[in-house]
Image (cartoon, rainbow, N blue to C red):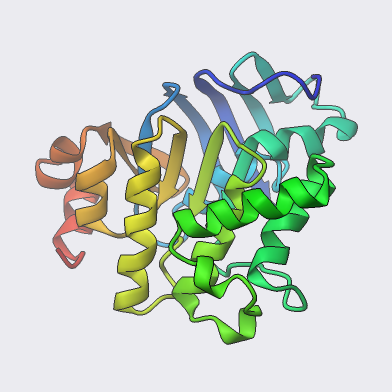
Length: 255
């Protein structure tokens, strides 16, 4: 894998498994995601959604199977990705976490600048210009000089989105990006993600937000017990599920 290669193209997951000790968290997942598609992962907490996302950029090392993104096989159980290339992988496969993970001693702008200067060696003046542009994209240009402790939860999450976008990823993974937020902050973050969904970036989003999934998703995947139980368009999976576990889940989710 070379740094000048991109990761545009479909994602292919084959027989992917992950165990923590004796606990099997992912069970032979088979999944193909088209380039540029928006996929929402839904299901109960502990069903494997977060672990699947973390395996796609090797924040968790799979126990078996394989993952390919675009032209690159990033993992298979026989020939693992060389450790020196993980930094390149994470430049192209961005991640947004539940807990923001901003550097508390840096301003919003500095958090977005650092992603560029460290990961891609962009010169500071260019990094500042791009940081301000991205903060404007997420509606935070007026908060560029604020530290994370001075930002609301929604503002911190939007800063984290700007930071993830700063290195120009081909794929964006979002792990319950609104789970720690109040209602108003949730709306702010989901509106940003809606705008990103129209840019053609491949996005995998673990979420419990039904209206958001209906609005933006090309596909909804329902997971339970480390397996894909149902996979289809939002109307099929959310409104007319075929499987009992899927029906039971959506009957108890606030609509």
